[in-house]
Amino acid sequence: MDSKLYNEIQESFTNYLTEKNLRKTEERYAILEGVCAFTGHFDIIMLHNKIEEARYYVSKSTVYNTLDVLLDAGIVVSYQINSQAVQYELKKYAETHSHLFCTKCGSTREIKNMHIKSCLDAMKTPGFTPDFYSLYIYGICRKCKNKIQKERKERKEGKTKQNK
Picture 1 (cartoon, helix red, strand yellow):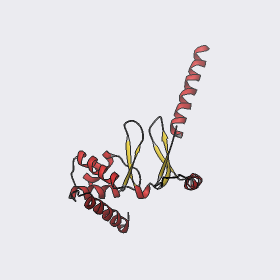
Picture 2 (cartoon, helix red, strand yellow):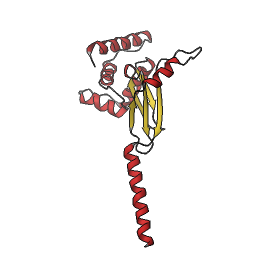
Picture 3 (cartoon, helix red, strand yellow):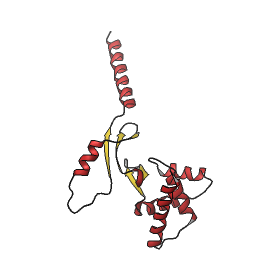
Picture 4 (cartoon, one colour):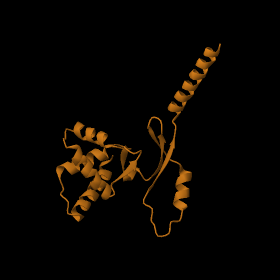
């Protein structure tokens, strides 16, 4: 991330903390820096590891609490992938893309589709101003599909051998 964008995000965070009368702690800014090091999705564990790699040690509860503050400040967005997994992303990077989620292995892929974007941009929503969107598409990735097809083929071949 370039320093200009980081400075804008940091200033926005500082303004939010001031407005809400929240403390401007070294830990919060270290976590913000860790968040800004990601150019895509991340989870709590990835963020905690990133912060520790920078030789800054904070508890996971501090990371969770600061992420809640960053969410409320509109700096970060969250995605509920399944009943247990939550991923986060800087709002600056989350503006308009869709997510492909494999229901077998849990892998996630982002796609940008200008047709979907233009349809959503043209959509009229009276009394509502969209900020960003995220479309979730669930299915089976190529790797899992190939594995399933291979297993089916092997079962079929096994039955054929048993019948002979």
